[in-house]
Image (spheres, rainbow, N blue to C red):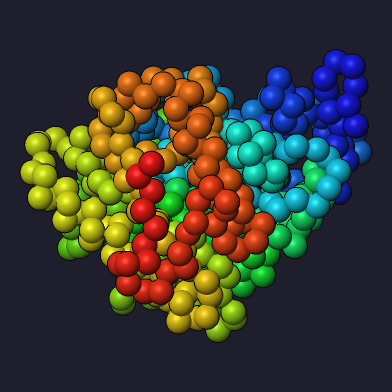
Length: 439
């Protein structure tokens, strides 16, 4: 229900919360707690409350260092505070009544940066154009989410956070006008890989009807369990103290030093520690390929941009030749997308595979990793200074993005991104059925 002040009261099973109705008429609940967790411990569901909780302010994001892709995406605007107490989610919905498809957003950032409660993750435009409920989640990052060290942490805590958030959504989203039986998990980059990982865990897979994976990187950059265990003692030495009580800045500093150590010492160049460890049921550590179970496959929408690698070349210490950028894009993003799509096809799931080739007419950085993001999520203010948009005006982003948002929502609702404005072929395993988004 709403009041004259524009506040909104929802009554999920977890307890009543207040949100706000924006000028766009979207109902927003940007600060709902879904869980709690002690440092390096498994997350637990937040206690049910009977008093009304104010959820009108964005929940804090996980502690993190600056993103190496800030020169591509631009600086964060109106960033919430950082805190280890970060297991919050944000909800946007057209109305509290109804039974709409639910789209759960898992943010990217290389497992070390980002947040679901950041303005770039705001789901308002997707909610309006797709008539869907959008949920954006925070989860633990870097060492706090993925350290593997005997006696301290078993690792993959960030993924367990995501599973807990998904369970909260399933049990509570009906109070926000969402259908708990129709949940699509969608994510970008590390968030896309996380969305796929959730399919290999029975606890979360049973809750997921469809998956959208944008710019999902190869699993070859993730450590095996043995590699993660090898990095643990180095991290502990770099931190220099009781890991359960050290100030968070010491944790972040040790995290950065561990990354450099791994770059110098790793027998598999390109792997990165303090990320999800490749352990069953996440993936086969021998082949680094995703291993799905025997249940029927969900529908999958998966894709990449035409110049994925250019975003990472910009942050390299020395110039990267264009042919190396092309090779990296194919090896790390394009070929893995085809491999994952083929696994879903083999499991009799429907697959739609796309290549996003749009780039600004003037300025910008080409069709780089994540360039489709401003067309799907986030506020105008959040993307105003984004270098990858070049001189593109916001009216153009809005007009072109509306088609994309409608396709994403149509897929969540019906299992196909085809709309009256954009016809998509179902992918059959070859290049001719890859949908081209060039506008």
